[in-house]
Amino acid sequence: MIINSINYNGRIFRTVNNTDNGEVNRETIFKYFQNDNTVWADYSGGGIISGHLIALVDTNGCLDMRYHHINDKNEIMTGVCKSKPEILEDGKIRMHEEWEWTCKDRSKGKSIVEEI
Image (cartoon, rainbow, N blue to C red; front, side):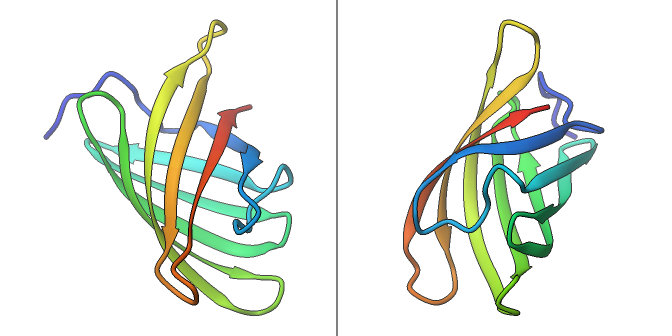
């Protein structure tokens, strides 16, 4: 078991910025859960019918994740993502993410999600 400084269990996030080749947006809501160093989330909204992610969290609260979702075009999309947390003044978390599709064009992008 890895002891980390951040517990993601029960936190809810929303995308605040994404590159053009990404599919999540401000209407996409992520609901996070955590058990020890395992993190997972369900997400939907803003063109995402249903999505899930799994991740391992390190001692700094960074996430190494894999994700998949079904979009509103009825396509299954998959990818990998590295997320680095930033603790805001109000105690909420902002995640700086670098991701890559593992399907279609395998393009890369960056996004920011914030706890709501």
